[in-house]
Length: 146
Image 1 (cartoon, rainbow, N blue to C red):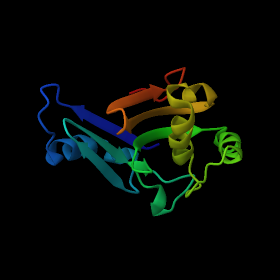
Image 2 (image 1 turned 180 degrees about the vertical axis):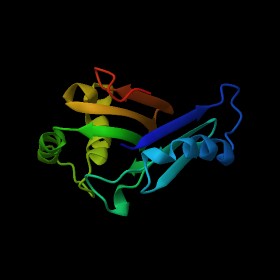
Image 3 (image 1 turned 45 degrees about the vertical axis):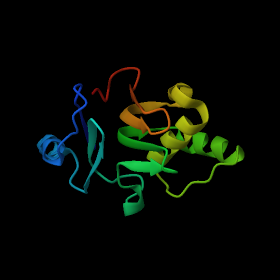
């Protein structure tokens, strides 16, 4: 059970690394296998990792896809292998064995509609560098709430 954190300064001031690190340290018990941060303009995302599906460091978060999208993710997409196969048939390639990367590539292909494909429990936040937006989602039942 990983943990994610985020901070947005509505006054457009940049976020201090110490702020997001302090917030993420509070949830350190949720992920002893690593931590990661994304600081971008007036917001920051943090992640505490509990490595389960792909334990290699290539699956550390925030995870980037082609320098366009970054994600912090907590949960499990039960049908990620089916979605991965569908995306591979569409010409996408994967560098990890993680469901996190499947979410990112599903977002690349289907946009916000990608969540309709997911069966599982999750909360995630994707930074879309192209559109300069944050897209956040949780599972339908709120098992992994924000």
